[in-house]
Image (tube, rainbow, N blue to C red):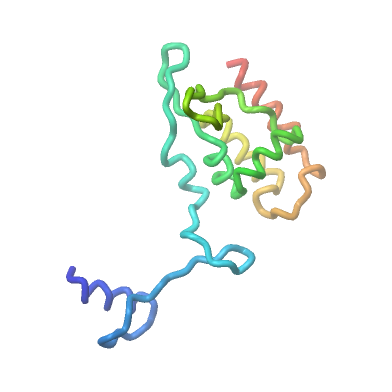
Length: 153
């Protein structure tokens, strides 16, 4: 498709009419505060880029705090805060730190841990509303139980 045809299609997709001299429409994304942001990643895309490590001779997929945050529709800082405050247990795995990496090790979660937390969050109503206090739910206890069960396997 030519550049002109591409621009015309972009305008048509937005219900706008193209005329010579007009520029390609800018599609902006906004967060819940109405501020412009980068294109939002969806919760469904959380597992797009797993990290793979060999554990016990088996290659295993692991996911970072960012992956967990995306799956739960939160920011990574929120997940770290939850861990610090005991809302969720400390991550079972950590990536090995490098000598030249001043930031140190990374928290890692398995697919089963993240999918379990997402299921529990959904069942407890935590995914639906960011305003629902976690203390009024069984989210923490159920996530702790999940981590214990997965550690026994």
